[in-house]
Length: 477
Image (cartoon, rainbow, N blue to C red; front, top):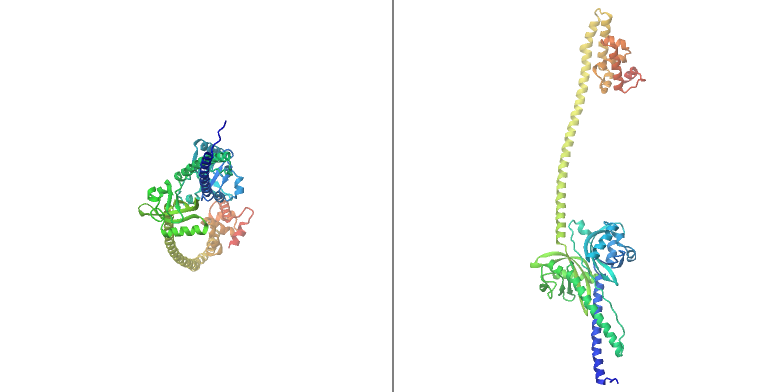
C-alpha cells in the first residue's frame, strides 16, 4: 500500500521546485543577455564576419560589413562562394587550403578578393574550424587592409574568432509536479549551454589579436580588457580595470567628448582617430571602433583599438619628402629657365653672326666677279690680237667662256649637287652643245672618261637615261 505524502511534505517539495524555477528564470535572462552580446558583436563588427560551409565553400551567414567590403547586396552575396571572390588562388589551391584548415583547426592568412565592380582588395582572414548551425563550419573574420598595403606599411592584425552560439528554449511552466520537473530539467540543460558559451566568449575576447576593452558608458571606467589591448597600452590588467578610461592607458577628456559626440550622432563609433595615452604617459595615435552592449540593466561600450602611429609617421615623412621634392623641382626649373635664356641670347648672337657672314660672302662674290672682269678678261683680249692657230683660239675661247660662267647662274646653282671640278668643266661644255669627242680633245682626256663623267653628272643631278642632260643644264642656268 502506497503511503501518501503529508501536506507539509508536499508544501516543502513545491517550495523547492519554486526555488529551482526562479533560478531557471535567472539562467534564462543571462542566456538572453549572452545572445544579445553575440548578435551585437556579429552585426556591428567593423570587420566582415561570415559562417562558411567547408564542403561547398558557400556562405551560410554573414554580417553587413562583409557585404559593404565587396559591394554586394546580402541577396547577391548568398548566391556566391569563395571560388567567386578569390583573386589569387586557383580552385584546386582553395580546396587544398580548406583541407588544411580542417586538419589544423584554424588558419590566419592574407589574400585578395575581387569586388562586384572588379576591383581587388587585400583581405586579412582569420578562419576557425568549429561547429554551428548543427554542422561543421568555418567561422571567418575578414579585415580589409588595402589602405595599409597602399601606404606600404601593412598593419596586419589577425582577427580571432568571435563565435558565441546560444540556444534558447523556453516553455510555459505548468503547475503540476511532473511539468515542473520537466521544466527544471530543461533549465539545467540551458544553464550548461550558457556556461559553455560564456567560456567560448571569454576565449574570443581574451585571446583575440584585436585590442578590445569593455568600459562603462556612464563614467568610462574599465570593466575588462584583453591581452592585445594591454600590449598596445603597455599596462597590466590591474592598472586598467576599475580605473577611468580618461586616465593613463586611454584617451583625454577632450577626446572622450569627441568619442561620445560621434556615438550620439551615429549610434556607434567607426574609424575615429584619437590620440591615446599609453605606458609612462606617452601618446600614440589610435583608430577606434565601438558599439554599445547591454548586460543586465547596465550599458557598456565594447571598443576595438588599432594603433596607427607608425602609419601616420610614415605619411608625415612622405608629405615632407614631397615638399622637399617640389622645392628641388622649382629650383631645377629656375636653373633650366636661366640656361634657356642664355641659350636664346647665344642663338640670337649666332644668327646675327651668320647673317653678317652671308653679307660678307655676297660682297666677296661680287668683288670676285668684278676682279675677273677688270683684271683677267682684258688680258684675254690682248692675247686674242696675236696670231693664233685654231687650237689656240679654241682654248682661248674656252677660257673666256669659262671665266664668264664662273659668275653665271649655272655655276652657282650646280654647286648644290657636289660636282667635282672636272665634272663642272664637262657640264659647262655639255651645256654649250659640245660632243663627247670635242670635250675629250679640248680637255685632253679619253672619250671613255668623258662618258663616265656624264653618268656621274646624271646620277648627281637625279636624271634618268631618257632625260636630256644639256636641256637640264640650261634650265639650271
